[in-house]
Amino acid sequence: MLKNLLMVFGILLSCNLFSQEVHLEGKIGTTEDIDIEGINIYNLTTSKGTVTNAEGEFRMLVSLNDSLSISAVHIQDKKIVIGNDQIKTKKIIINLSEKMNELSTVTIHRPLTGYIGSDANIIPVQAVLTATSIGLPNADLPQLSKTRRQLYAANSGPVDMLINALSGRTKMIKKRLELEKIHVLTLALLDKFPETYFTDALKIDKLQVYSFIFFCEDDPDYKIVMKQNSMEIIEFLEKKSVEYRGK
Image (cartoon, rainbow, N blue to C red; front, side, top):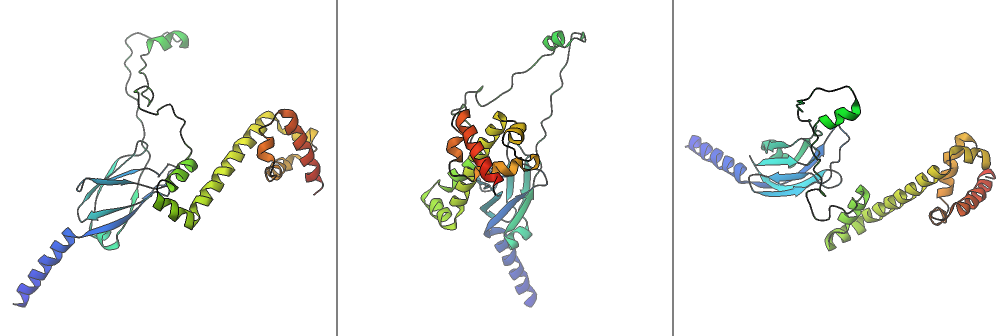
């Protein structure tokens, strides 16, 4: 009698494990410097999917033995089967690697001459497929930076907007976006004025040039002045150099 009860209990437990749905919390792991945002996670068993956030995290409903497909244009596709460990812990880490694009073999029917100019016309070249060449909508629009995509995602809906505003994440992303804008202005400044200008004309020590530039970035008028003509930028830099040397 006891043996039969144990058998029935075991069967019921197995059935419960197979039918149990859990909210699985997953994270993409990688040893390579690849973008882990926007990776597709698709449950082949239930035909439902989601995408990873900026930290490579995702959340979805799964059951035991569900098959998950993980894919993106820049990573090697991967398939995994949900096991007992994932059902019990409700967590999973998926390690991915970058996709290597292999070049197809090119057969040359005419002998090469050794001269690059003429040989370039012999070797067949296939046109590169791009979003623009195949006519995808909005293909010509400039690609958003990662920070701008994060800001867009943080304000994509009323619930997300409220949560991110209360947590301070939206404020942090906006600050990071502002720093990116300043960085672009500074790169333009360094393109326009060589390091010798700072050392010879402004009398800034060679080892302190970048310290001086950071000092200038802290000025409230920095962003406005950097968009003006060269004469106004020079006047600003001369004024700031006097302040910097007098610190």
